[in-house]
Image (cartoon, rainbow, N blue to C red; front, side, top):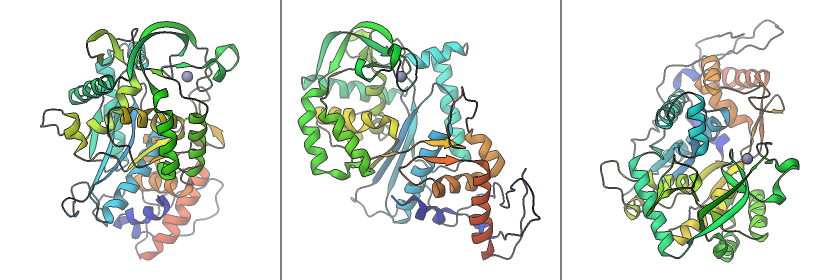
Length: 423
Ligand SMILES: [Zn+2]
C-alpha cells in the first residue's frame, strides 16, 4: 500500500529531461515543471499487458462507483489516482490486474439533479458519466473496466443477487416509519441526528417518511461479521478504521431497508414493480457486474469466476460502513466470498479548510490538470497526502513540492532545460 514508493515508477521520460534553473526571487511561487509532457510511459504498465502465469489469481482493485448527481470533484480524483498508482505497481510486479471504476446512477437524488438541470435521468447520467471518463483520461488513469449501474448487464446481476438473498430468507417486507435524509438516501437513527433532526453529513433537516419496504436481515450477520473481523484484522485498513467498524458492529446491527416505494429511477424489485432496489444495494454489486464480459449473457456466478473476490476496495472513509458492514453481510447471504481488503482513505482539505460549494473553495481536478499538468497533479497528491489520513492542498505548497521534487531533484538527471512559469 506504499503509494509514495510507487509514484516514482510512473514517471514518463520527458520528466527526466528537466533541469531546474534558479529563478529570481518573486512574491508568487512559480512552477518550473513541464506541463502535460507528451505521453509515453517509461514502463509500460497499461491494461493490455498480462505476464501472469495462467491460473494465478488476478489482482482486482476497485474505486467506488461515483455518484453522478454532480460532475467529478477532487475527492473522487484522489481515490482514483491512488488506485491507479496501486494498479500500475501490481502490473510491474507481473500480476494480471483488473482495475474497476465506474458510476453509480440510480436513486432519488439523481432524478432530482436531472430535473434541476431541465434534463431526464438517462441524459443526465450519460453526461456526468462521460465527464468521469474524460477526467480519467486527463489524469492518465489506466482502468480496465468502467461499469455503469444503468448497464443492462448490471441490472441482470443485481436481480440475480437479490433473488439469491431472498431465497436465503434474508429479505422481508415491513412498514418503516422514520426520518429520512434525501441526500444520504437513507433512513437515520434519531440518536445520530443533530438539532432539528439535521443529518450530521449534510447538515439539513431529515424528513419524516413512512414506507412499506423490503428489508435485509443485517442483524442475522452480526456474529459472523464480528468473527470475520477478529480472524482477518487486515480486512479493514488502515487499522484505526478497523476499531471504528468493530464498534459499529458491537453497538448492534439493525436490519436496513433495501427498496424504495417512492423512487422510480432505479432497478425494479424482482416480482414487485411498485418498488425499486435501494441505490446502495444496487451499486455495490457493480464490483461484480463489472467482471461480466460485455459479449456474454450476464450471469452472477460466471462474473464471480472472472476475478471475484476483489483484492482491494479503495474508498473514502465516509462510505466505510457500506463496504465493511453492509456489503460483507450481503455477500455472506448470497453465499459469495468477501473482498480481501477495504481501505478507507481520508478527506482532502484546501488551505486547511473543508471544501464545499457553499464555501466557494472547491478544487476542480480538470482545472488543476489544465494549469499544472497530469503528472504534477498525480505526484502532489500521492506524495503529500499520507495514505489513509486526511491531506491538505494549497497552491503554494503544490508549486513548491513539484518544483522541489520533480523539477529540482528528478529534473537534474538530464541536461535538457525546460522552464515553465505559471502565475
Ligand atoms: Zn445526509
